Length: 279
Image 1: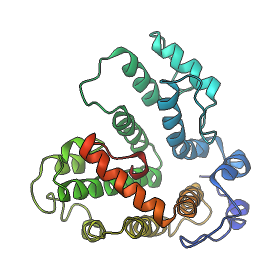
Image 2: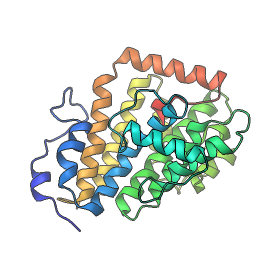
Image 3: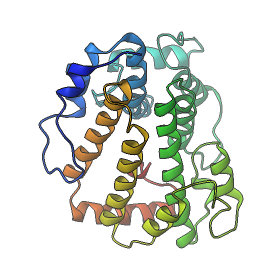
Image 4: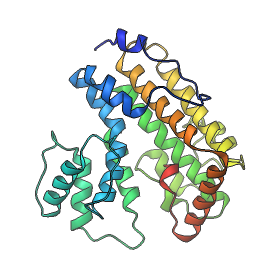
């Protein structure tokens, strides 16, 4: 396992309360990523694939759409792969993640059912792919984050008397319990250690405060999970996650948070869909 003494020692201290950053997720990609071993780059790629997911969704609808340049693939590469897969071709897994190839092929070749949400399907495939990675911490992070997101979505949906099952993303045992259980705790007490914390968080009316409490839970989880990882790729992965979290908070003021909350509830009522910001 590679050790990154110089890189980690040079990282700035981060706090969820930071109001400005001298470093960004994009900076990490250009400055730190090239110094990683080839095997460790694979774990960091999993993080940046979230931007590729969003870019694919844009480009399959509009090949000229502007994309988020933080992804692993350029617009030209994605457009080429989409075109090839649309025509029934294949892209080697070593070149392009198998889950993205599968999603694109299915998008063009398998008729979608009514009310089918492509965003949810892609999220499911993404989490399945990431949770199977051979880095224990990275796989655990994706599993934890999926569980947190789904439980909060389920609690919100139940509160407003919407169908819970249709809003859950993924195919884990926790996902199945959320879809099928009528119990107050969805039968997850003892299965999810932080369930009580999430239930308390879900009761907070003000969205920005609720999101902050959720991120505090995430922050503590990742710090605890990597407590003994000092100069490893896991520590760099956590730094990247924390950077993204702080960037989001810097750009999210209270009024925007309230607008997002209203949007979420409207979407639940009209489309039975949770906006991407809450995935």
